[in-house]
Length: 251
Ligand code: ADP
Ligand code: MG
Ligand code: MG
Image (cartoon, protein in one colour):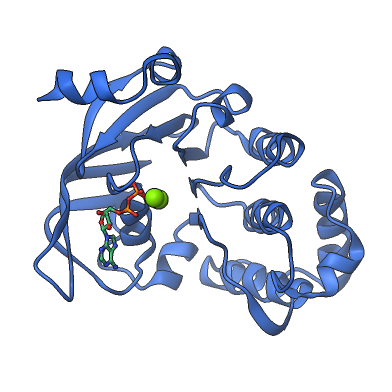
């Protein structure tokens, strides 16, 4: 599904290398987790995959189902099936949440050569999915994320994901700032979307989210590289012993 090879990224504005040869393959149907200390480049990896400005790829490649995503515009990446839920979801004043979602869903359908969703169908689907995430009708009418609590923003991102039905979902620290109940809702939302044709990359600093979203593969990132890959037990090892000994091993 997603194949990243030897990815090197630096800041556009300064000569500062951030990703220093990331290799990562995520297969369809799998959930991969990336853990790592603060500042190791986890968010940068998700930003670069989403096409955010300010970063320059100096070497390597990233493909989604064999297609070079680094050459695509951000909206083309979304149409190709890539979805990113960010650590800090953006607020969009003046744009109703429901209108935003409907526009996004139909833009994506159009890009895929599919028919638009009718208003009635859209309403039915969004109500169903919002209910499962405990998002009430009032939250659907408010401007996107404006005045939403941290937990509401994260749930709203999972709703966006559920509506867009992407192939490759990347969640960057979707658990940060969430209480246990909100985290469980987010995890349940993700688990409900697990599917043989879809893959997840769950980026998290702490192990606790992985108690609820059971990963198939765990990667440890440090200093701009994946330094270790293993099964779910690797997350438990981090929980017990911290990152220090893994960093020491990798040197
Ligand atoms: P993580 O998500 O693993 O905590 P980040 O990807 O946010 O790590 O950051 C990796 C490193 O790159 C950090 O040292 C951070 O300070 C630096 N960095 C990332 N983006 C910028 C930026 N726009 N300007 C300056 N430094 C940046
Ligand atoms: Mg960070
Ligand atoms: Mg981060």
